[in-house]
Image (cartoon, rainbow, N blue to C red; front, side, top):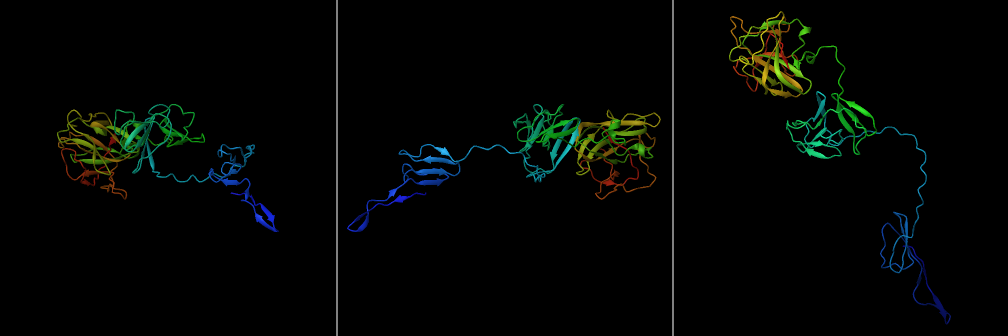
Length: 392
């Protein structure tokens, strides 16, 4: 508070003496809040430094502001030069994201996600996006509205599992962005994002068609090797269970195991089977039984032979990775009733079929000969013959 007081004196008998109390003028109060009226007097002034409002005390209190010391907002000056692009910084609780493509749809999943992963975005229409949050999948129908879809429910648009984001294919790019983020959508098997600045970027774009032949070019999903790039000769595999590794680069639905028979007149007997195993866990992920009756690979009698397949007991959807295909063809080896399977060049002799540092088998056999497919897989041994196999 700032104020001035006036003291009044009178002279009597040659001496000055104070008469009454000091006379007080108007006081100024400077504050960022209102001031109590108990000690203030009518006419006192208050300046609010936070707002610039000016107040004057009346008999009944401060009342309302009588003015403001701030002037009107001036005109906006010309924009200055744009500064350098700032550091994008680090996203809190960020986790690696991996993506796979199924047809025209995209599926992304977190790598070791231990906490809920929140994904913000917009959609072309309802149920275009699903988000895993606190253990459940939600379908985002726009404006951050979340609807439960359910984990692993194959009856919904999005199969669950551990996927944290799924987007159906979109025909066109949304024209506007949501308030809090970007527009993300799938188109033609790739993921596209419109950033907040309007720029459209493509994530995980499909590579140009390679010059090498891929399994898909021949109606297959994966194979042990391209049989056209090596000297391959059909040969009997005997009744010993054989093994060949195949690699999947994307999440894939598998219904059949395929071989190329140079010749086969039929004749598998009881104890014949084929199965697919996860090469990391050795767990059986696909099984084909009764391949001697009702599920037997097709006979082949033409020159050079052709592909023959046996159906899995049930279709399986496999994540990207390496898988072992193992089969046992039980037949009369004396009369050669079994199929002659295409095999890669074997003139080296008996090569060790673990070619790297992680003990992954490219080819092999089982040390025992079970009459039904085991789970888990064990007892892989080296095999001098390397047979061709594929998945479809």
